[in-house]
Image 1 (tube, rainbow, N blue to C red):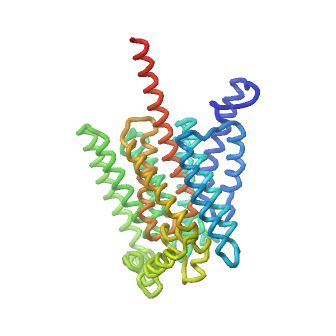
Image 2 (image 1 turned 90 degrees about the vertical axis):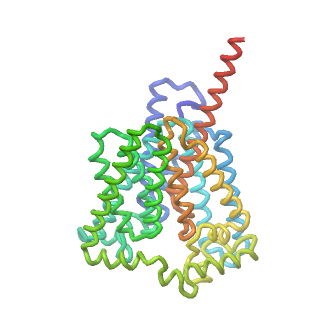
Image 3 (image 1 turned 135 degrees about the vertical axis):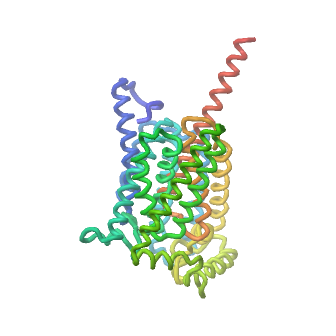
Amino acid sequence: MSAVDIRGPVVARPQLAALGLLGSALVAFGVFLSGFVISEPAPYELLMVVQIALWFLFGLKISRTVAPLLAALMVFNVGGFLSLTVMDDLGTGPMYLAVSTFLALTSVFYAAIIEDSHKRLKLIFQAWVGSAIITGMLGILGYFHAFPGSDVFTLYDRAKGAFQDPNVFGPFLVAPSLYLMHGLLTGKLAGAPMRIAGLLILSLGIFLSFSRAAWGLFLLSAVMLVFVLLLKERTGAFRLKILILSLAAIAFMVTAMLIALQFDKVADLFLSRTQLVQEYDGGHLGRFDRHRIGFLMSMEKPLGIGPMVFSQIFPEDEHNIWLKSLTTYGWLGFVTYVGLIATTIALGFRYLLRNRPWQPYLMIAWIVIVGHTAIGNVIDTDHWRHFYMLLGIIWGCIALEHNHLRRRSGDEQGTHHHAS
């Protein structure tokens, strides 16, 4: 499947090309399935397990650049398995960590196939947009009870699409929204109507998820995208185009939101969700109270307390990725996770504005990871499939950049040697 490193007997070129096409189609289908996680293990897991095994069997390699991602994620999960040793009753703990380890491997897999060919980035994002539009439509139709049984796509009167939770459904739609926005701001006008239609579906899906984390993520990511594009493009005409289109988009979104708010059900839920601190946030043993007590408790538990144990002690789960990494993966997991996120953001930022074929994808993934890191303070992103995919995309782009720099320095040395 990797046209670069096929091992074994020499394979004829047409067969190689067919293998490469099949491999890319499997990748696209895998990304598409990530938008449909009504129960676990989801079809995504089953396909990815087979796919990862096949790709590495056919010679996909982990490079020196991607190896640190693998090492960090494995150490993080070792922290998790160590936390099992302090549990009285293992329960679902081992299965939770099996899923964690699997998701870590998907991240490394995405990085490796992107390094193998940067053209797969377009495929990944197009599949993600397709998946997001379908799951987004399901959420919207479910919210308005458009057909019998459609309420399976809602939870507590909030759109959740083909997900288990509106708080995962909303953030899942943000990266594809940014991809469409980027196309709208930088692409040809001919493709604008389709992109606008897609963006309307996704933004309405995010709005109807009534997830404050998703709203914040969407707003922060959109502002950052415009800011980075203004930084990157030096011409006045292009900057003006971005500014005008951005203002038009804001006006359009506000109008759409005002129309949606004409429905009493939407308006009531919107008013209740826009209160910054809800009853379950600020009350006794509310979210912020649990964060404070949980961090204090974790200071005395170097190995953590084990997966899913926090919600047995307190009324609810951690709802904070930093606290979650302390309770479920111990001090080892916490330090590794913080280090991995800091390194990913720093390296991604270093290569953010370089003019490369993969630059738009790196920019989108980096912005959305920064946003996820911010919302991680009030939400638990631990088992989010798309979060691991974003990590893999950034590390794949970092590896592409390193290879590009190596080739260029090799060419320069060759030229210098030839000249002397």
